[in-house]
Image 1 (cartoon, rainbow, N blue to C red):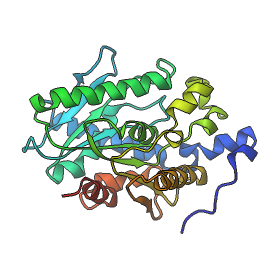
Image 2: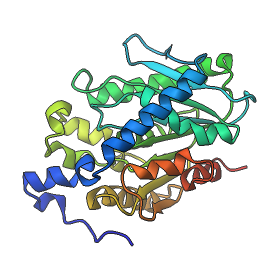
Image 3: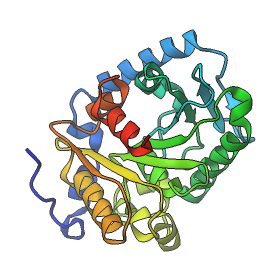
Length: 278
């Protein structure tokens, strides 16, 4: 059953608003799940070292991990990791390639510089340059098929920002942040240091909808404010003519929802296939 509607974030005191976006606090086994992801990802990377750490820019984190399919024309899942733009690394999310690789897809994971070493504008620019690089250089690395862009949490935000990239056929934003304004009033902003201009230019909720179909997924066991962000974004896209389903995943929280992308029979992997179409 879905959580009750979230109270208006503008009516929350600072402690309540912090809690409304504190996914780790809300999920007691979050660290155990993150540790499992990291261990499984290390195993996958050790088994497929050929495409790791390909640079698309000059900084340490501007790197790709590429896992090409046997068929260079197969679809490619491009997955952007989360962590509120200030933690985590692509290397620990390689396990989410498992389902797509099993389906015969390629998978590519871009890294990006974290705050406070980069601004939200800088991070968004890096993902754009990464997609440019993949469009130009991917075929030389065995990846030439249609791109399904996806990401989780902050990666869901970056997915929504870049769904209009020329190389993206369709997108799947998972448990994302689509309006940055509430984040400015939390301790997450200590490193982000969001400005009014950045909120206006980098909140997908406030931007023109993209033509590419986009699924918007969230778990019904997530924090109410995270659920609201996804529902409101999808509603705004639909009202503006944007294509793509709203995908509430019953009973899943902010972390275990990702198993639906990782598993070969997972709902989110099925949604990715549907979004690409025939």
